[in-house]
Length: 107
Image (cartoon, rainbow, N blue to C red; front, side, top):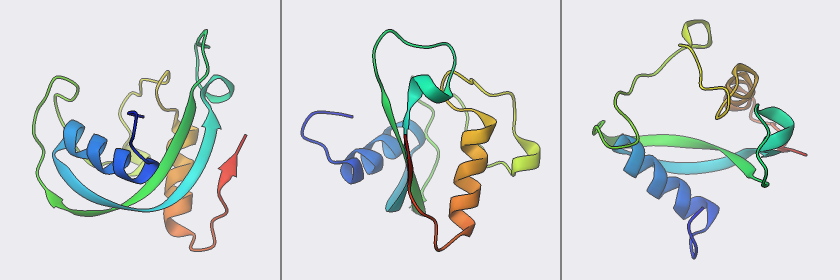
């Protein structure tokens, strides 16, 4: 997260920068200690924040971090960079999206 940014504003900014889409964050799904959920372990700590967002508009813009963009169902997931996100983390996000009573998960 960038200095002087909140989780909300940083989410909006990062999604725009990396995808070209405009979003409105609606709720936090989980706060996870990266080293407890992703391999390989890093020598430093990272707290991962999973945020459910409403897609407002925009369009994909290729950039130095993202070469392509597509939406996937759980059954169509491509090969993942599991150091970043695992299938279990994506499943968690799908579950939270469909559960209005979702309780934030945290380590």
